Length: 210
Image: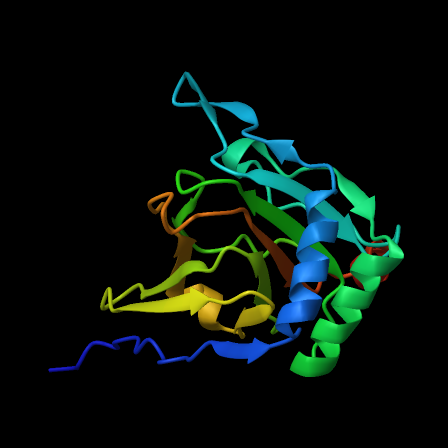
C-alpha cells in the first residue's frame, strides 16, 4: 500500500527588530498623524454596507510601481508617491532588514475597535520569494500570528519603532492580525507601515514579452 504524500508546513519564525529609537519613533508618529488617509471606508459585503475598521493610505517609491491588494475590504486605497520622509523611513528599514521594499500600506487604528482580522496577504505583483514587514508607531498593541494547520498562535507586543517581518514563504502558511482590544490598551493611535517589494510596471511588461 502506498503512503499518501503529506505536506509538512514549515515552522517559520518572524523577524522582529528595532528600527528607530523611542525618540525617533515619537517624531515619526507625530509626522504620520498629519498624513491624509481613508478612514472607515464604506463598501458592500454580502449585500450589506460595512466599513473598513481602520484608516488606510498607500505609497510607492516612484511612478513605475503600483500596489494593489485587490478588491478585499473595498479595494486598495489610491497610490501616492512617497515624500522624502517616507523614503527615508523605507531606506532605513531596508538597511536594517537587508531588503528592497518599495511600497508602504499605512494602517491607522484610532481606538481599540479599529482592527484587522486574521488573513494572508494577496501577493499580487510581489517580487519573487519576498515577504512583508510591518513597522509600528504609537500605541503598542498585540500582533497575532497563527499557523494554519495547527492553529498554534504567537502573540507579539508590537513596540513603537519596531518592525515585524514575515519572510518568504511565511505568508503562505500563517495568518496574521491586529485584533480589537480595550481602549485602556489602545490609549492612543497605532499607525503601522507595511512594506512590500512590488515588481515595477516596466519590468512586468518586459517579462510578458515573447
